[in-house]
Image (tube, rainbow, N blue to C red; front, side, top):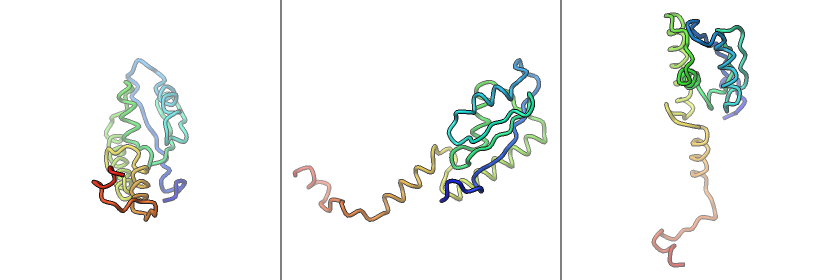
Length: 136
């Protein structure tokens, strides 16, 4: 699996609701998302619109938006944005599942490499049964 595969780099737009005490929610969200692993670029294009580029195997749009809602920002929940959001969630979750990431799993790429490592034949393994190992 190529880490820099353009198939896994996603570019999404996040829109915020204007009825919020913070008039510049996009800038606030950009400052919060800038240091998160897997997010490549965050650009507030106007006070209510945020452009995000991220690596899908590290983080998904659903995780990003859930984090923003959890800290108190209000996403635009008009019908068009809810439909787009649901479509992105579904396609990203399907793509992640097809590459070994299950829904809700944290850092699924680490699990993939750990499984591969355990399947490799290591010549330094102890062939004795488990109950004999503690005696020597």
